[in-house]
Image 1 (cartoon, rainbow, N blue to C red):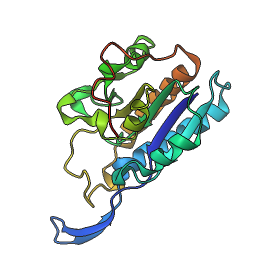
Image 2: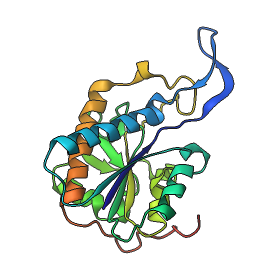
Image 3: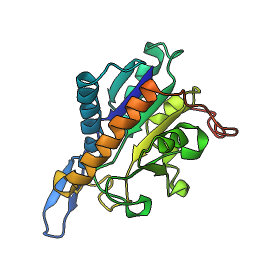
Image 4: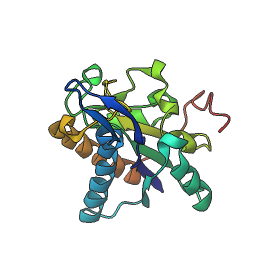
Length: 214
C-alpha cells in the first residue's frame, strides 16, 4: 500500500493584514499551502482511474488540521492497518517554481537523504531533487513526519521557494503558476505510479535519526 496525501485546511480566519493598497484581509486562503497539493492528489486519483490498475493499493488521503498538529493524519494512522504500507508521499506547496531546485516543473523531496525513495525516483527519470534547504527542517513540518515516526518511508514533495505569502492572506490563487504546477503534477503522477508498481523504498543507514517522539 502507498499513501498519497495533502492537507486541505489552512490557517483559516486570522488577524487582518493590510496589503500595499491599504485593503485589510483576514481570510487565509492557502492557495499554495495547500490548495496546490490537494488539487495534485485529485489529479493523481483521476490518472490512476484512467490508467492500468497499480500493483499496490494506493490510498488517497486528504487530511485536515495539518496546521493544528497533523490532526487528520493522526486520526488516520490508528484507524487503518499500516503493516502493508510501504511508503507515504505528501504533496505540499507546488504552486510556484523554486529556482534553487531547478525552476519550472521541478520539485524537491524533504528528507531525500533518509530513504532510497528519492534515488529510485531519479533513476526512473523523475525531475524530483533533494531538498535544497535542509536547514529549514521541512521534513519535520508536514504530514509525512507522522508516518516516518512509525517507520514508514515518508516524504513531502514541494517547490516552496520561501515566498513571502506563506501563512498570510496574500497566498492567493492569482499567484499560482499553473503551467509549473501542471508539470509538477505530472511528475507526481509518475512518481506515484512508480511507488505503486516499483521497488519498495527503504530507510538508509541513519535515516531514522531524530524521529523519536510525537
